[in-house]
Image 1 (cartoon, rainbow, N blue to C red):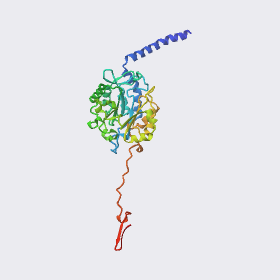
Image 2: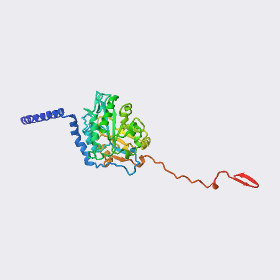
Image 3: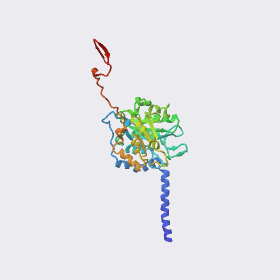
Image 4: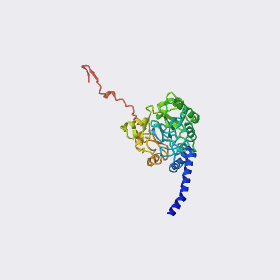
Length: 354
Protein backbone atom coordinates (compact mmCIF):
# COMPACT_ATOMS: atom_id res chain seq x y z
CA UNK A 1 0.00 0.00 0.00
CA UNK A 2 2.85 2.35 0.78
CA UNK A 3 4.26 1.73 -2.72
CA UNK A 4 0.95 2.63 -4.35
CA UNK A 5 0.62 5.66 -2.11
CA UNK A 6 4.13 6.77 -2.98
CA UNK A 7 3.42 6.37 -6.72
CA UNK A 8 0.26 8.42 -6.40
CA UNK A 9 2.12 11.18 -4.59
CA UNK A 10 4.69 11.22 -7.40
CA UNK A 11 2.16 11.27 -10.25
CA UNK A 12 -0.42 13.64 -8.78
CA UNK A 13 1.75 16.80 -8.98
CA UNK A 14 2.63 16.01 -12.61
CA UNK A 15 -1.03 15.60 -13.56
CA UNK A 16 -1.91 18.77 -11.68
CA UNK A 17 0.80 20.74 -13.48
CA UNK A 18 -0.43 19.45 -16.86
CA UNK A 19 -4.02 20.42 -16.07
CA UNK A 20 -2.98 23.88 -14.89
CA UNK A 21 -0.88 24.27 -18.04
CA UNK A 22 -3.84 23.28 -20.22
CA UNK A 23 -6.13 25.74 -18.46
CA UNK A 24 -3.57 28.53 -18.82
CA UNK A 25 -3.08 27.68 -22.51
CA UNK A 26 -6.82 27.81 -23.17
CA UNK A 27 -7.15 31.05 -21.23
CA UNK A 28 -4.13 32.90 -22.62
CA UNK A 29 -3.93 31.64 -26.21
CA UNK A 30 -6.09 33.75 -28.56
CA UNK A 31 -9.07 31.88 -29.98
CA UNK A 32 -7.96 32.41 -33.58
CA UNK A 33 -4.58 30.83 -32.80
CA UNK A 34 -6.26 27.80 -31.24
CA UNK A 35 -8.42 27.39 -34.35
CA UNK A 36 -5.41 27.70 -36.65
CA UNK A 37 -3.35 25.15 -34.71
CA UNK A 38 -6.25 22.71 -34.76
CA UNK A 39 -6.90 23.23 -38.48
CA UNK A 40 -3.33 22.81 -39.76
CA UNK A 41 -3.03 18.99 -39.65
CA UNK A 42 -6.50 18.55 -41.13
CA UNK A 43 -6.06 20.89 -44.08
CA UNK A 44 -2.47 19.83 -44.72
CA UNK A 45 -3.83 16.34 -45.36
CA UNK A 46 -5.57 17.60 -48.51
CA UNK A 47 -2.29 18.82 -49.98
CA UNK A 48 -0.81 15.33 -49.79
CA UNK A 49 -3.61 13.61 -51.75
CA UNK A 50 -4.66 16.24 -54.29
CA UNK A 51 -2.94 17.44 -57.46
CA UNK A 52 -5.04 20.43 -58.43
CA UNK A 53 -4.74 22.31 -61.71
CA UNK A 54 -6.80 25.30 -62.91
CA UNK A 55 -9.56 24.79 -65.46
CA UNK A 56 -8.45 27.55 -67.80
CA UNK A 57 -10.66 28.47 -70.72
CA UNK A 58 -12.18 25.21 -72.05
CA UNK A 59 -11.69 24.15 -75.66
CA UNK A 60 -15.45 24.52 -76.06
CA UNK A 61 -15.86 28.19 -75.06
CA UNK A 62 -19.64 27.94 -75.00
CA UNK A 63 -19.60 25.87 -71.79
CA UNK A 64 -21.45 27.86 -69.13
CA UNK A 65 -21.15 28.24 -65.38
CA UNK A 66 -24.12 25.92 -64.83
CA UNK A 67 -22.38 23.18 -66.84
CA UNK A 68 -19.80 22.63 -64.10
CA UNK A 69 -19.60 21.12 -60.64
CA UNK A 70 -17.55 23.30 -58.26
CA UNK A 71 -15.81 22.21 -55.07
CA UNK A 72 -17.73 24.02 -52.32
CA UNK A 73 -17.23 24.78 -48.64
CA UNK A 74 -19.67 25.19 -45.76
CA UNK A 75 -18.73 26.18 -42.19
CA UNK A 76 -15.71 27.74 -43.85
CA UNK A 77 -14.02 29.11 -40.71
CA UNK A 78 -14.39 25.99 -38.57
CA UNK A 79 -11.18 23.99 -38.02
CA UNK A 80 -12.84 20.63 -37.43
CA UNK A 81 -16.02 18.58 -37.23
CA UNK A 82 -17.25 19.81 -33.84
CA UNK A 83 -20.14 22.23 -33.79
CA UNK A 84 -18.93 24.03 -30.64
CA UNK A 85 -15.48 25.38 -31.45
CA UNK A 86 -13.38 28.47 -32.06
CA UNK A 87 -13.28 29.87 -35.60
CA UNK A 88 -10.70 32.03 -37.36
CA UNK A 89 -10.05 33.83 -40.63
CA UNK A 90 -6.62 32.15 -40.49
CA UNK A 91 -8.41 29.00 -41.68
CA UNK A 92 -9.20 30.65 -45.04
CA UNK A 93 -5.67 30.42 -46.53
CA UNK A 94 -5.55 26.71 -45.71
CA UNK A 95 -9.07 26.21 -47.00
CA UNK A 96 -8.60 27.81 -50.43
CA UNK A 97 -5.35 25.89 -50.88
CA UNK A 98 -7.39 22.69 -50.49
CA UNK A 99 -9.40 23.67 -53.55
CA UNK A 100 -12.97 24.85 -52.85
CA UNK A 101 -14.08 27.66 -55.17
CA UNK A 102 -17.43 28.21 -53.46
CA UNK A 103 -17.04 29.49 -49.90
CA UNK A 104 -19.99 30.33 -47.67
CA UNK A 105 -19.95 32.71 -44.70
CA UNK A 106 -22.75 33.34 -42.18
CA UNK A 107 -23.03 37.06 -41.40
CA UNK A 108 -24.36 38.52 -38.13
CA UNK A 109 -24.70 41.92 -36.49
CA UNK A 110 -22.02 42.47 -33.84
CA UNK A 111 -24.46 44.64 -31.90
CA UNK A 112 -23.21 47.95 -33.21
CA UNK A 113 -24.00 47.55 -36.91
CA UNK A 114 -20.74 45.85 -37.80
CA UNK A 115 -20.69 42.57 -39.78
CA UNK A 116 -19.11 39.51 -38.17
CA UNK A 117 -18.89 35.89 -39.26
CA UNK A 118 -20.05 33.16 -36.91
CA UNK A 119 -22.61 30.39 -36.55
CA UNK A 120 -25.62 30.62 -34.26
CA UNK A 121 -29.07 29.25 -33.65
CA UNK A 122 -30.82 32.56 -33.18
CA UNK A 123 -34.18 30.99 -32.32
CA UNK A 124 -32.68 29.11 -29.38
CA UNK A 125 -30.02 31.69 -28.60
CA UNK A 126 -27.20 29.15 -28.98
CA UNK A 127 -23.75 30.07 -30.30
CA UNK A 128 -22.31 27.16 -32.25
CA UNK A 129 -19.04 29.09 -32.65
CA UNK A 130 -17.39 30.27 -29.44
CA UNK A 131 -16.29 33.50 -31.09
CA UNK A 132 -16.96 35.68 -34.13
CA UNK A 133 -14.59 37.01 -36.80
CA UNK A 134 -14.82 40.45 -38.46
CA UNK A 135 -16.12 40.13 -42.01
CA UNK A 136 -13.48 42.57 -43.21
CA UNK A 137 -10.72 40.20 -42.06
CA UNK A 138 -12.30 37.41 -44.11
CA UNK A 139 -12.38 39.65 -47.20
CA UNK A 140 -8.67 40.40 -46.81
CA UNK A 141 -7.87 36.70 -46.43
CA UNK A 142 -9.87 35.84 -49.56
CA UNK A 143 -8.30 38.62 -51.61
CA UNK A 144 -4.77 37.66 -50.55
CA UNK A 145 -5.15 33.93 -51.13
CA UNK A 146 -8.01 32.90 -53.44
CA UNK A 147 -6.51 34.67 -56.49
CA UNK A 148 -2.85 34.19 -55.58
CA UNK A 149 -1.14 31.53 -57.70
CA UNK A 150 1.43 30.89 -54.95
CA UNK A 151 -1.17 30.41 -52.20
CA UNK A 152 -3.77 28.59 -54.32
CA UNK A 153 -3.15 26.13 -57.18
CA UNK A 154 -6.46 27.01 -58.88
CA UNK A 155 -6.31 30.77 -58.43
CA UNK A 156 -7.55 31.53 -61.96
CA UNK A 157 -10.81 29.58 -61.54
CA UNK A 158 -13.98 31.57 -60.76
CA UNK A 159 -14.47 32.07 -57.02
CA UNK A 160 -17.98 32.20 -55.54
CA UNK A 161 -18.54 33.93 -52.20
CA UNK A 162 -21.88 33.01 -50.64
CA UNK A 163 -23.09 35.41 -47.95
CA UNK A 164 -25.93 34.31 -45.68
CA UNK A 165 -27.26 37.29 -43.74
CA UNK A 166 -28.81 36.51 -40.36
CA UNK A 167 -29.86 40.11 -39.79
CA UNK A 168 -32.21 42.67 -41.29
CA UNK A 169 -29.96 45.58 -40.30
CA UNK A 170 -29.17 47.47 -43.51
CA UNK A 171 -26.08 48.97 -41.87
CA UNK A 172 -24.56 45.50 -41.59
CA UNK A 173 -25.14 44.78 -45.28
CA UNK A 174 -23.86 48.20 -46.30
CA UNK A 175 -20.71 47.62 -44.25
CA UNK A 176 -20.23 44.26 -45.98
CA UNK A 177 -20.43 45.97 -49.36
CA UNK A 178 -17.81 48.52 -48.34
CA UNK A 179 -15.51 45.77 -47.04
CA UNK A 180 -15.77 43.88 -50.34
CA UNK A 181 -15.10 47.00 -52.38
CA UNK A 182 -12.09 47.86 -50.23
CA UNK A 183 -10.42 44.45 -50.21
CA UNK A 184 -11.64 42.68 -53.36
CA UNK A 185 -12.49 45.47 -55.83
CA UNK A 186 -10.04 44.24 -58.48
CA UNK A 187 -11.74 40.83 -58.60
CA UNK A 188 -15.40 41.89 -58.55
CA UNK A 189 -17.42 41.51 -61.74
CA UNK A 190 -18.11 44.68 -63.71
CA UNK A 191 -21.26 46.84 -63.75
CA UNK A 192 -22.87 44.70 -66.47
CA UNK A 193 -23.19 41.93 -63.87
CA UNK A 194 -24.36 44.22 -61.06
CA UNK A 195 -27.91 44.13 -59.73
CA UNK A 196 -28.21 40.66 -61.37
CA UNK A 197 -28.62 42.28 -64.78
CA UNK A 198 -27.42 39.09 -66.45
CA UNK A 199 -28.27 35.47 -65.75
CA UNK A 200 -24.87 34.38 -64.50
CA UNK A 201 -25.84 30.70 -64.57
CA UNK A 202 -25.67 30.68 -68.38
CA UNK A 203 -22.64 32.95 -68.67
CA UNK A 204 -19.70 31.29 -70.49
CA UNK A 205 -17.20 30.25 -67.84
CA UNK A 206 -14.37 31.78 -69.88
CA UNK A 207 -15.77 35.21 -69.00
CA UNK A 208 -15.52 34.49 -65.27
CA UNK A 209 -11.87 33.45 -64.95
CA UNK A 210 -10.08 35.05 -61.95
CA UNK A 211 -13.32 36.75 -60.91
CA UNK A 212 -15.17 36.95 -57.60
CA UNK A 213 -18.85 36.04 -57.91
CA UNK A 214 -21.00 37.25 -55.00
CA UNK A 215 -24.23 35.41 -54.22
CA UNK A 216 -26.79 36.00 -51.49
CA UNK A 217 -30.52 36.09 -50.76
CA UNK A 218 -33.28 38.58 -51.44
CA UNK A 219 -32.78 40.43 -48.15
CA UNK A 220 -30.02 42.56 -49.71
CA UNK A 221 -32.55 44.49 -51.81
CA UNK A 222 -32.35 48.20 -51.12
CA UNK A 223 -28.84 48.02 -49.62
CA UNK A 224 -25.38 48.64 -51.06
CA UNK A 225 -24.95 44.87 -51.29
CA UNK A 226 -27.65 44.69 -53.95
CA UNK A 227 -25.28 46.17 -56.53
CA UNK A 228 -22.56 43.60 -55.77
CA UNK A 229 -24.72 40.46 -55.71
CA UNK A 230 -24.41 38.72 -59.07
CA UNK A 231 -26.71 35.78 -58.38
CA UNK A 232 -29.46 35.37 -55.79
CA UNK A 233 -31.30 32.38 -54.40
CA UNK A 234 -34.26 34.74 -54.27
CA UNK A 235 -34.60 34.20 -58.04
CA UNK A 236 -35.31 31.18 -60.22
CA UNK A 237 -31.74 31.06 -61.56
CA UNK A 238 -30.32 29.78 -58.26
CA UNK A 239 -31.92 27.37 -55.83
CA UNK A 240 -30.71 26.94 -52.26
CA UNK A 241 -31.70 23.57 -50.79
CA UNK A 242 -30.69 21.66 -47.68
CA UNK A 243 -29.14 18.23 -48.10
CA UNK A 244 -32.40 16.55 -47.03
CA UNK A 245 -34.48 18.62 -49.46
CA UNK A 246 -32.22 17.79 -52.40
CA UNK A 247 -31.35 14.17 -51.64
CA UNK A 248 -34.96 13.26 -50.85
CA UNK A 249 -36.62 15.33 -53.56
CA UNK A 250 -40.07 14.25 -54.68
CA UNK A 251 -39.29 15.04 -58.32
CA UNK A 252 -35.73 14.20 -59.30
CA UNK A 253 -36.53 14.61 -63.01
CA UNK A 254 -37.62 18.21 -62.42
CA UNK A 255 -34.44 18.92 -60.41
CA UNK A 256 -32.26 17.49 -63.18
CA UNK A 257 -34.13 19.58 -65.75
CA UNK A 258 -33.73 22.73 -63.65
CA UNK A 259 -29.98 22.16 -63.31
CA UNK A 260 -29.47 22.01 -67.08
CA UNK A 261 -29.79 25.80 -67.39
CA UNK A 262 -29.76 26.97 -63.76
CA UNK A 263 -27.77 26.29 -60.59
CA UNK A 264 -28.64 24.47 -57.37
CA UNK A 265 -26.54 24.88 -54.24
CA UNK A 266 -27.00 22.31 -51.50
CA UNK A 267 -26.13 23.23 -47.91
CA UNK A 268 -25.80 20.91 -44.90
CA UNK A 269 -28.59 20.35 -42.41
CA UNK A 270 -27.34 21.85 -39.15
CA UNK A 271 -27.26 19.08 -36.56
CA UNK A 272 -25.28 18.04 -33.51
CA UNK A 273 -21.99 18.07 -35.43
CA UNK A 274 -20.43 19.22 -38.69
CA UNK A 275 -19.85 15.77 -40.19
CA UNK A 276 -20.47 15.54 -43.94
CA UNK A 277 -23.16 13.63 -45.82
CA UNK A 278 -22.50 11.67 -49.01
CA UNK A 279 -22.96 13.97 -52.00
CA UNK A 280 -23.01 11.34 -54.76
CA UNK A 281 -26.79 11.43 -55.22
CA UNK A 282 -26.64 15.22 -55.54
CA UNK A 283 -24.12 14.91 -58.37
CA UNK A 284 -26.43 12.52 -60.22
CA UNK A 285 -29.14 15.20 -60.06
CA UNK A 286 -26.75 17.74 -61.59
CA UNK A 287 -26.55 19.91 -58.44
CA UNK A 288 -23.48 22.07 -59.07
CA UNK A 289 -22.53 23.49 -55.67
CA UNK A 290 -22.69 20.87 -52.91
CA UNK A 291 -21.26 22.49 -49.80
CA UNK A 292 -19.08 20.33 -47.55
CA UNK A 293 -17.18 20.93 -44.31
CA UNK A 294 -13.51 20.67 -45.27
CA UNK A 295 -12.63 20.59 -41.57
CA UNK A 296 -14.23 17.14 -41.27
CA UNK A 297 -12.11 14.51 -43.00
CA UNK A 298 -14.67 11.69 -42.97
CA UNK A 299 -15.76 8.97 -45.39
CA UNK A 300 -18.18 11.30 -47.23
CA UNK A 301 -15.41 13.86 -47.66
CA UNK A 302 -13.05 11.22 -49.05
CA UNK A 303 -15.61 10.39 -51.75
CA UNK A 304 -16.20 14.09 -52.42
CA UNK A 305 -12.57 15.07 -52.94
CA UNK A 306 -12.23 12.08 -55.25
CA UNK A 307 -14.45 14.05 -57.64
CA UNK A 308 -12.23 17.14 -57.34
CA UNK A 309 -8.80 15.57 -56.96
CA UNK A 310 -7.38 17.14 -60.12
CA UNK A 311 -9.67 20.13 -60.71
CA UNK A 312 -11.88 22.28 -58.50
CA UNK A 313 -14.21 22.98 -61.44
CA UNK A 314 -15.38 19.81 -63.21
CA UNK A 315 -17.57 19.51 -66.31
CA UNK A 316 -20.87 17.72 -65.70
CA UNK A 317 -21.68 14.60 -67.74
CA UNK A 318 -23.32 15.42 -71.07
CA UNK A 319 -26.76 13.96 -70.12
CA UNK A 320 -26.92 16.46 -67.23
CA UNK A 321 -26.06 19.49 -69.34
CA UNK A 322 -28.39 21.48 -71.60
CA UNK A 323 -30.00 19.48 -74.36
CA UNK A 324 -28.94 21.01 -77.67
CA UNK A 325 -31.88 21.09 -80.10
CA UNK A 326 -31.19 19.01 -83.20
CA UNK A 327 -30.85 21.13 -86.32
CA UNK A 328 -32.62 19.94 -89.46
CA UNK A 329 -31.91 20.92 -93.04
CA UNK A 330 -34.46 23.07 -94.83
CA UNK A 331 -36.67 20.62 -96.71
CA UNK A 332 -36.61 20.65 -100.51
CA UNK A 333 -39.95 21.64 -102.03
CA UNK A 334 -41.52 18.79 -104.01
CA UNK A 335 -42.04 18.86 -107.76
CA UNK A 336 -45.41 20.62 -108.40
CA UNK A 337 -46.19 18.14 -111.17
CA UNK A 338 -46.49 15.31 -108.63
CA UNK A 339 -48.52 17.26 -106.10
CA UNK A 340 -51.60 15.72 -104.49
CA UNK A 341 -53.37 19.07 -104.63
CA UNK A 342 -56.46 19.28 -106.93
CA UNK A 343 -55.39 19.75 -110.55
CA UNK A 344 -57.43 21.24 -113.38
CA UNK A 345 -57.66 19.32 -116.64
CA UNK A 346 -59.14 20.93 -119.71
CA UNK A 347 -59.84 19.93 -123.32
CA UNK A 348 -62.23 21.04 -126.08
CA UNK A 349 -64.88 18.75 -124.66
CA UNK A 350 -64.33 18.94 -120.85
CA UNK A 351 -63.03 21.14 -118.00
CA UNK A 352 -62.66 19.23 -114.75
CA UNK A 353 -60.67 19.19 -111.47
CA UNK A 354 -59.16 15.93 -110.31
